[in-house]
Length: 145
Image (tube, rainbow, N blue to C red):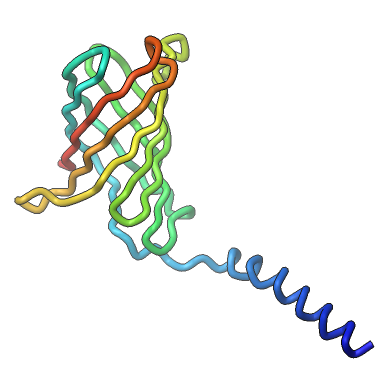
């Protein structure tokens, strides 16, 4: 009986430990990427463009060096894209979609975060769109105001 209780205790400990850790997240200690960014990009179908990106951290979902963000991109004369971003240190993943679903203009991007020579925060993104005009890719460089 003692052996059974020992095995049962070990099994319960293994089961509860991850749950207990998940309930006590560590505070956010990374670089906050929140802010407004001026961007220039090159889209595979549309060519060169400019945009304004706004990132807003979801503080409840940001722990250690990892953070979640609400993403908004405004492109003059074309529209607004909304999505989410997640950062792990200086790497960021972004999902986005044009507000008009009929455009099929949605995708995923990956970005590297760094500082410019004059100390401003920037990110450089590559994105992929599966459905937009038969498939599309592009690049974008953004500098925080």
